[in-house]
Amino acid sequence: MSRAVDGSKRKNHRKKILKLAKGYWGRRHSNYKTAKDAVAKGLTYAYRDRKDRKGDFRALWIVRINAACRGEGMSYSRFIEGLNKAGITLNRKALAFLVLEDATAFKAIVAQARQALGA
Image (cartoon, rainbow, N blue to C red; front, side, top):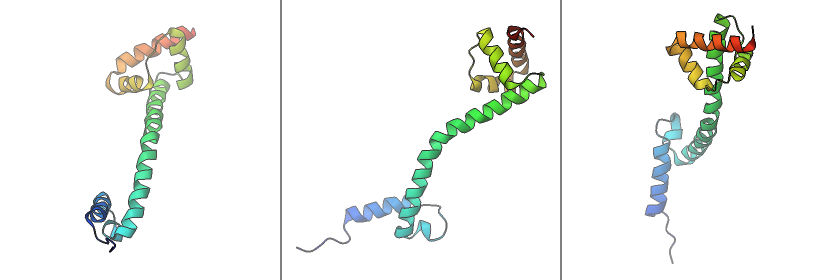
């Protein structure tokens, strides 16, 4: 029995890989052998970075909150401690949104945190 060399399954698989490699530079988008490696690496990075994105955004929110707190004469860690003592359960995403969109509301929260600390 003869061996199938260029069957539809094989062709479809190669087509799928080359479609995923669309936009890659040089031979990586047109040569199956190099595209296969590039796509595998790209998918690995995509999986890893979807997880990392969550930490990146948390860090961004903390930086924004810290900058706003410093403007009010308080450090970030003292602010978070004050929120915990005051029983305010806003997450960092919501606090960072308040910093950008509603500065007066954020100032009121800082005042409550300061009051809870007893300063």
